[in-house]
Image (cartoon, rainbow, N blue to C red):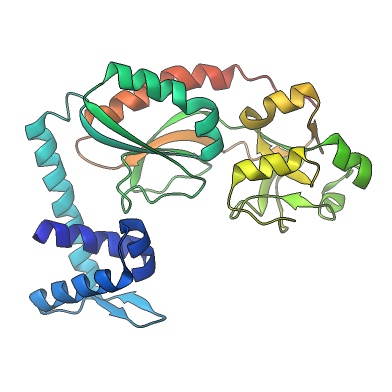
Length: 301
């Protein structure tokens, strides 16, 4: 029972609010609040100050979080040592992958992994939302990012070249921007959280502020809007290589592109013992995806 309480408490602190913790745990905020109150009553200490609009961890609550997080990690390590999951791929493995990348590349790798390791129960979450690997109990995630948080371990799988692009139909109707100042006057397309764009150009890094002409939480939907002629987007070459080759999309301002720092990483929560299933899938992802990404043609200007 205490372990369940600790896990719920850690999830609450990592979520940052009752409502977000409830969403992640598929529970009601009232139930989360009730369990928290029971834990505080048992400890005789207030862990969190909470009102309808405010959520603040007390110093005692922060110290308790650090302690119980270490306890839970140690318990998982002990179980893995006993069960053999550290040496033999087995048990549940929850994987999180961006939607477009997962749709294009992940299924064959997951299929091969399932055949190689039948003792592993796979759960694959395709979402453009950055899941909290620790708070949402994700064992392995693929992240496309220039910077990784310090609490995760990672292995770089490959680069993610990104280009500004649009459909010929949009450019015929609205004109082709000749510089960044002109680009700001066009219809920009991006999923939530993807603007501003961090670009690299002839004079080095540059930031392009703006607002998406159509708001969406789906990067895949942005791709389809771009193909339909709704505006200009910053897209990964692995996602639009075919459309560029076929002329359904064309480069815009070819002297500019996404930051070269962005890479594709396999990441997992830092631990003393990494489960064998995590290591095995990471090895397979690198073996299958790295050559595929390297073989992508340079985006045509």
